[in-house]
Length: 314
Image (tube, rainbow, N blue to C red; front, top):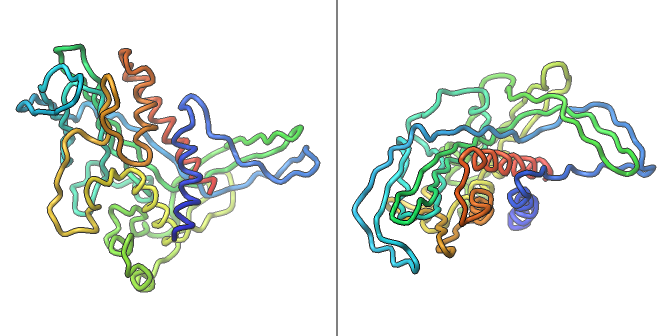
């Protein structure tokens, strides 16, 4: 398992830390002559879908809190929350936190082909610092990561690979599979990060999921349920801040730590989780400037698409 984690991080982190205006490089195919033409083919992929949820946020001023942060203008505090999720509680700073849906949580969206094949559902709530004496502005984005099939054409010219994505699809053949998402698969949750994982996995009885090729192409792709869940678990643990045990590893009530995973003002006050620094960098390219929400949304969408592509390159 340790080697799998290291290999996963080796691929994922370059995706997270690629500049959002760039695309993570494709894999280089084997072509000894330097000029090759390959037949079109279909492959398993990780697709992403970003949705702006800002209109669903409930924002309110709450009681002042002694934040004990050097350089903070004052201790006024605000709360921003989406229905069913813990609030982001912060002073007037750049900040964010990340959540995932959990078993038994009321569905925010009706089931869809993409959600049935989800490996992670990242809910990001963040604040943009306002002027001194003012209030922060809050935004929310959902990024759904889901298994899909992609059709490609590929050739190598002068030693340089040229990949072209021709089409993509997210359609499971047969009945919808059990959840491929760590956070919502109640059968698999006890197996992850457990010293008894080997026995748990033996009892799990994972199956296969067959995904249809994109329209106009042939070649269904078979995905192993256990492999999909292992990737989902390593991926979602990359978002986990580590301030609390993950919910599947404790019976204690969840204790929410105010301030989120990332706090940025005149200095960096907090960074938590593998990709928090990357998210902070793409959200606030110029920490002293005034952020453009449209550019922030596009940056998050592009960053997470690169992360999906990084998983494809495993």
